[in-house]
Image (cartoon, rainbow, N blue to C red; front, side, top):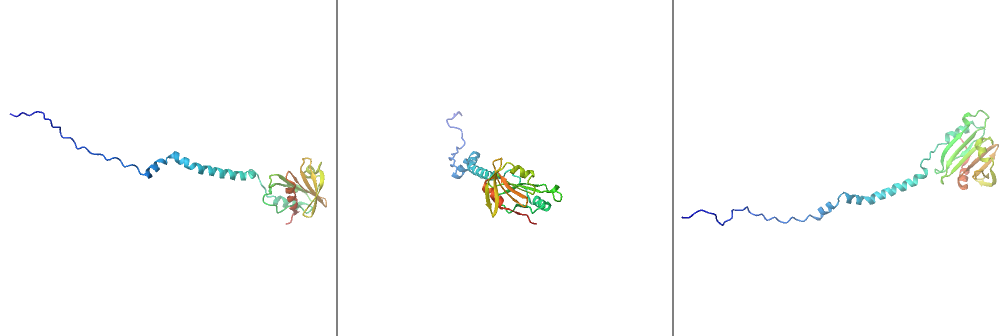
Length: 207
């Protein structure tokens, strides 16, 4: 009689799958993976540095005019011309790099026959001060502050006009001339050349 018992046969096993090796990533994918945030920052750094250099250069170019408040002296000049008992001269046609920074006159309080004084201040191309004063009163404070104590240092011929060259008690140059009791002065810390440019621009105000 034949009995039933264990056999040497293995139970059926699921079929074994053969897994193919993964394909290597393409060069494009590898390159994309390398472009992480750090790499992007490193790539942008030269561009940022170039922008900073450009901004710094522009700021340096403009630093000379930074904070300079300019004025339009025309209204003040016209007021002086309207009230004065003499033909009022003033600088006209100066280049744009002569910046008018102040203008004042006492003409607003002047009655008929009263002296009238006009003052204009400029920032020159070398960033120095050049001042202009005209008055028919030699004792007017703006004139006295410049001329009192000044010493003569020859003359200067500027566009056919003879100006007296002086050295003020502040060791600054002043150019002065007087016509019919009217004293005109150009002075300041600017160079003699820049002061002569302002003096050459002085002409009688019209209109």
